[in-house]
Length: 293
Image (cartoon, rainbow, N blue to C red; front, side):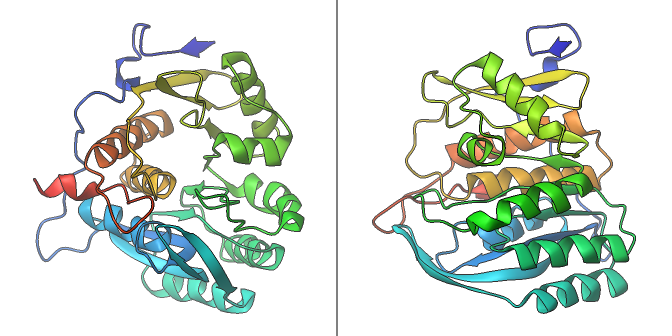
């Protein structure tokens, strides 16, 4: 079964609709908490910096477990330093044991050791909060951010814990060996990824250049849901995947069902792309600062 924006009951799947903002907490009250387990971007466009911008603008308290420190700017990633896996685990435990979380998302995990530490800590702490896994394998410039040997760890250890995984088409090719070129191959990829254990899979079609539309496909093992938006003509799209996953995690923290959370995230990132700005000599960042206007 497939539900799309053209079908009854699926109107919320059009990303061109205005953003219906998540409720902000009253001043002086404790907001919801969402944990970002990801790398730091020295240029401020992606990684935990992008996550924290979106979370703050959605009224959520952002907690972080830093997995890597990258040396990058708008032109690319020069190098990165992995945080020791036990320190990553300790960060997660420190946040959860004191502050508590209503959702989490992962970004750059860098290595098998860090992936294993995240998965082991998640299980050991008995966490049941929604977990959005953005399986970051490379930067938007193609710079590798995940050791090739870590792909099996991602598939075997982290995917079974995920509420939702959000690969782009390059990541789909690395994870399940499917080249997505049309709707049929996009569905086949979603099915192959779902077989690895996550509850839901969102195959992002924004990198499918044969269409003037951005068509993302959500799958839960039974039904497909299409999310359709006009492709934004901008070269300033750094941090788009992080922003999408962070917005979805915030929506899940608020208790939205996964299809509704994805619809919200898609609208949020569409507006962030519309508000993106030039920076440096390369790709500028998407900007959720539209929320302030």
